[in-house]
Image 1 (cartoon, helix red, strand yellow):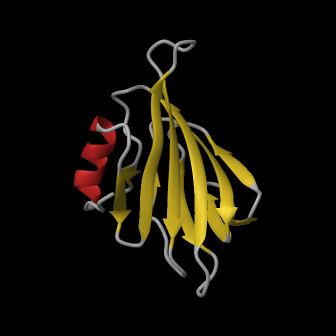
Image 2 (cartoon, rainbow, N blue to C red):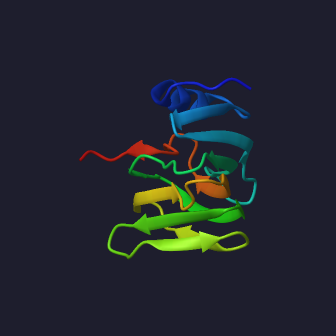
Amino acid sequence: MKALPFFAAALALSLCTSATFAHDPSEKVTVLQDQMLKNAPGKKAMMIEVDYKPGQSSIAHKHDGTAMAYVLEGEVISQVKGEQPITYKKGQFWYEPAGSEHLVSKNASQTKPAKLLVFMVLAPDEQVLIPLKN
């Protein structure tokens, strides 16, 4: 699938059930699934794959919804506001409550790629990613 610039990607993400895009030139994000939840009216679940090239990172951001991340490949450094950065290795995972400010999300390696599987629960009108202002 085709890569899109960040703002177009955010719009595409809210409109598409399966899209691939880069919301920052350094990472590639692929929506694997976007499904309304029958047992939680007004909420949907999304499964997203995030691919980082060596040394690359996400922009500082927050999510309207709850996020759970699992490292599929490599190592990822993650820092949520108010906490210390943590390096997660393949097979490790973390949880981010809705509205958490994700200050750092980056590939820990300068030579190897990294990949995350992210599961989110949010309302259909909530944004997956909101860039933080400086």
